[in-house]
Length: 330
Ligand SMILES: NC(=O)c1ccc[n+]([C@@H]2O[C@H](COP(=O)([O-])OP(=O)(O)OC[C@H]3O[C@@H](n4cnc5c(N)ncnc54)[C@H](OP(=O)(O)O)[C@@H]3O)[C@@H](O)[C@H]2O)c1
Image 1 (cartoon, helix red, strand yellow):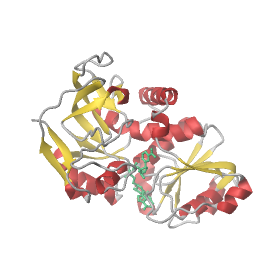
Image 2 (image 1 turned 30 degrees about the horizontal axis):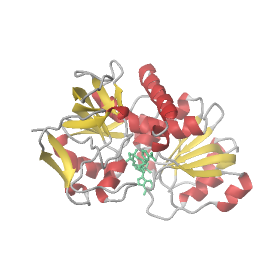
Image 3 (image 1 turned 135 degrees about the horizontal axis):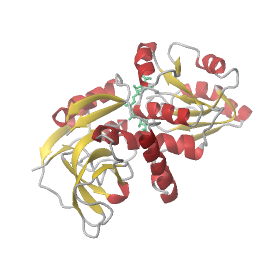
């Protein structure tokens, strides 16, 4: 009997239980994947605590990103065949599908064939981080040469992905992290990147210095809270500030005077904006696959855990000690 991770109540990492379940058959438009690697996301910890965009129906599975081998296909499915190496893309609701398990069912619109030679680890680490950053930076903001891009929580998986994408576009990524204790590790993960430590430095002055007085054109922020005032003050006229997460427990103000004075755009953003639009979804997938193939995109892996240590892995995820993606080996 395959084992899957479920929780029967919302709460801390300890609510996650590895349970044996009856094998499921894929329905129309679905495949079953024998999982080899799972990529963890902050969104799953938020879902587990009941503080995510959607509310779990208990008992609930969870997980957006798995990579493995197709094991069975549902009626009428011709896009994938048993034996193919695939990974899941977070383009579904965790109230319907969960990817933490030895065998999982996935809807085919949210499955990609793994590029030749890509490891299960890298495949499970790629889709959330690169597609999220691509949608905001490339698709919406049109990042390019001459742009400086502010990237708070730069040590996060999405932050490191954004650094790689900004750099691939010829832009200047400016990594923001809270404290300099992470300097060496961040530089190892993203060599040569300009870094500002938000709790130790004057963010606005540093960004001005690093951009020759111009300011940044884009801020890509998963934190929110009072820091958005400093991000807005660090942007150039007509700059754009994306808020794509809620890591700060504090309320997020609207930086009115900076927005008025400089004609700034401040907008919310989620990956689902891309995944629910077929044309943008296809363009984003093509970008990620080509970046993985030509080496401009290379996931940074923080640490591996076995599936039996899913509780410890979630604790590590919430410790904020990681630099990049946490992987569960199955
Ligand atoms: N909108 C979307 O579609 C979308 C998609 C993917 C992810 N996200 C969001 O993006 C964020 C990063 O996701 P992830 O899975 O890559 O996370 P992660 O790897 O777990 O990111 C952890 C990092 O976030 C920073 N951080 C954590 N709590 C913070 C706080 N209270 N104040 C400031 N910084 C804090 C820390 O960086 P430092 O120690 O370096 O400061 C920490 O190392 C999450 O908020 C997630 O929900 C959104």
